[in-house]
Each structure stands twice: as structure tokens, then as C-alpha cells.
Length: 621
Image (cartoon, rainbow, N blue to C red; front, side, top):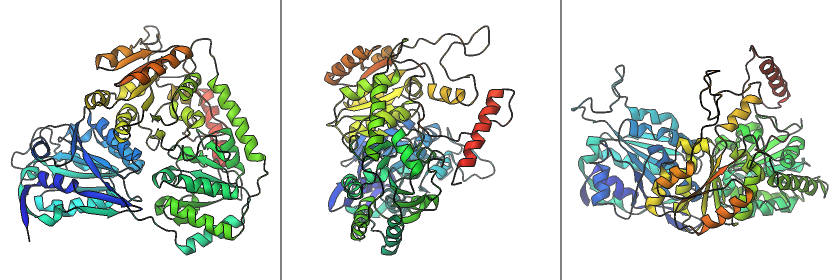
């Protein structure tokens, strides 16, 4: 057997550089490169390997470990999970900084490979700087904290262990049903140790992602149930996009006249103006979709994991006869809500289901004008929100209207947290698929700018816009510098509403007078954060890092700034002051957040009673 002597880190890079995936006969190189921040624990191991023998892998220098993993996640999401960047860090705080982003990837079912440094396997220089010492179990290190947020976790304590661990890592990363964060803990001494690896370990490896076909029996059970139902509603989740099943979704809906509602991850599966697109579903849903969900006797979930926002904490479905058919590549997700489970690829499942229902001459019971009427009513509401004026300044919905009307149909918007996901889910009008990039599995503040950089890496020929609030910007903006360093333009649209206004609204909607969520000075009178708003010049801050900047306080200024930003060659930020509380509200939806049963405030007690009444009305617990 031919062998080659390499350090474990060198061998890992050579292995990753030769991994490919194949879907529908199209072969794609899987690992594009590594993002990293060096420190002790990886600089003399993976760092040396990247410097001296990177192969075709690209290295991107991160500025914050969480931020670079968000960027890698967004890249993989935009690439439909068919390409990834790995991420490497030092031990201790550098590694632990990646945990939030690891959970974000796992919750969203997005592949990301994490390579944190770990303390010495030999334990000879023990304890090293930044080592976590657990006196009750000395085998535990800081990197063990990745276990609950990883779909696969391993520690390489001997260089030859890499071979089995790397193969298992690729198995999980390329499995649509199991994918998420994969963590390989790399002790800093083992990274530098050499081993005679078989040359065959580094040969090109193609991982075939075969479309999982529905089992005939499960398909037939679903068909028999659907045939009995007259008012079905499709919920399109992220699996529709990852499976590239947009045309199949449209064909299926049109064949039987079934309206379609979209989750955050599934939005842009159909164009907003498709006659059967009822828009967003759930807590952040449209009036059209939520009314259809309330009356539906059947929900056909396609590629959705049914979060509480999608189901309005399971209160969205109010027809006592409602049942569920779920098409999902993951059996865990397809079985939710006591559904008739069809575990399959979304595209393959839709094709098979349409063929069977056509053979059965299935038709829904909707009146011809019913869906059109609901859609027309909602479109008029969006027009109203887009045109809304406010005496104190620019309303948030007005700002979004200007942005939506000015951006091109192929431009990508990206968001994650605050009040903006609700507004965008309801009112953003997507035309082309994959132009609406929302991280709402974790709704992780700080994903926005990092994610926009990752999306720009994935889509170099498209304009990428991060839409975020001032709270998210302050939380994590470091990869703005990386976008400049790498020459990958992103445009940051920062809507400044002086704090965490989404949660401020949630507080006040459940009996609070508002506490701790606005960016105000501490008052000498009340002793609380009730003074004036803090004046923060976000444009000056971004400018100091090298971004082109604009400020826009009116609709006209915003439109002008967007047009000028399009002509900028590098990363740009537009600061947009908006009036707090001018976001959209709920449309016949409810969210169970838990309200105190006992309080000195009568408003809080009343809010608790309202919550109890809503819980009692839920059909599914």
C-alpha cells in the first residue's frame, strides 16, 4: 500500500480538498476553503498546513469566531447545502465563541464543519493557557461544550484517528436529513504529529446525495387521506428550496388549486404574485394565509420543521377535522403533529404525489374567487403599509416599501432578528427564488452582516443586502471588515429604532410598561434607563472601518441612497432612522411566550388570563 507521511493537520486539509457531492448527476466540489482566526491551539498545526500546503482550499481571515461561522453557514444555505467552508479556531475562548453559531447551523439544518483547537492530548504542558480544568472529570475540555449543538462530534487524540473521524464527518455533512454543525476537536499537539497515511485516503471522493423516494405504502396512505379533504393548505418550508423543488411546488399547487403558505425558510419558493401564494404563515403571517390555515381541513407540510412561529404555537389550525400530511427528508420532521408521514425528498415527493392524485381525479372544494379575494385583500394591506406616513419620521414599513420597490428582482436580502423578520415575512415581495435569506431557526442577532458576507461569497454576481436593526449591528458587525478585505461587496441597511424594539413591543403587549429594551441614558430621577435616546452615529462607525456610508431620514433620501449605494464598488452602509413601534402587528395569530400568573400589576395578570384562554383553544398539545 502506498503511503505518505503528513501531519494530522496536513492530512485533514488534503482530505477535505478532495471531497465532492453529486446531485442529479451534477458534481460539485464540497469544501471551498477554511475561515479561521489563529491562536495557540491551531496556528502551528492547521495554520502551518494552510500556509504551506493548502491545495486548492481558500483561507479567509475571520474577525470574530461566531461571525465567521455565521458567514460559513450563510454560504452553505445560499448554496443549497452543496458547498461549505470549514472554520478553525484556537482553544478556550476562541473555540467557545463558535458555539452560538454552531447551534444556529444545527437548528437550521445547515452543514458547517468546525475545527476548534483543543489542549494537549499528551497533557505534558498541562494546564496550558486557556485550558478549562474540570476537576471531577479531567477528560473534559472547553470543546466538549460543542456536543449538544453538534450533529456529530469527535476528538482526534491520535493522528490515525483522523481517517475514521473525517469519513463520519462527511457522512453527516452531506446527509440532508442529518446535517448541521460537525465538530472535530483537534488537540494542538496531535495537529502537528505525523503519520504514514495511505494514499488512498486522499483520493477524490464523491458523496452521492440521492433523492429519497417516498415509500409506496406511505404515499398511498397520504393519497387516501387527501382524497377525503376539501380545503387543503400547503406549507412550503426550506426543504422546497434546498431540494430545488420550486417548479414542482408550483405545478402541484396549480394542478389541484391548493393555496400555498410559506415559512421564513421557504419564502421565495413561489413568486409573491403567484395567484396561489397566500404569503407568510403563522405568528408573522399574512391575514390571507392565517385565515386559510384556520379553516383548513388538511395541512400538507413540505420541507418544514413546524416551529412555533409557523404553527402560531399550534393555534393556527382551528378546524377540528384538520389533519396533516408531511413530506420531509427527515423522519423526525415528517412525523410532527401526528402527521401521515411521507419521508422523502421534497421534489421527488411532490412529483409522486401529483401523479397519484391526478390518477384519482382529485379536486379541492375552494370557490374560484375565494383564494383570489383573500390575496387581493392582503396585497392591498401591503400597499397601505408600504405607503404609511408618520408625523415623527420614517415608518419602518414605509422604509421597507421603498427598499423593496428600489431593489432588483435578483437582489438578495438577508435578515435574522428583531422586528424586521416579522415585517419582511409578511410584506416583502420576492419574485425570484433564493433572494430571501432569513435565519429564523435560531433568530440569532449578529447573523446579519456575517451572513451577508457569506451570501456574497456564494453569489458573487448578485447584490446582497443585510437588513438589520441597531441592536443586531451592535451585537456583531466585525465581518463587515472581512467583506472589505475580501473585496466582496455587501450593502448594510441599518434601521435605527433606538434599541431592542421588537422585545419592547412584546413586553408591552403582555402587561409591561417597557423595561430595559431601549437604548436610553440612565435617569437620575428614576434610576432606570428612562432618559433620552443615546445618539449613536452608525455611519461614522462604519466609515471608520472603510465602508462607504449614507444617511436617509425620508423616503426620498432612502431611495436616492439606495441608487447611489448600488453604484459603490465596495461594502456600503445606509443608516436609516425609523420611528419605534412602526412595524407590522399580528394578523389573527398568537404566540405563547409565558406570562406571569402572579404580579403586582393588574395588566400582567390580565395578560396571563388571555394567554390561558388561547392555550385552552389549541387543538394540538
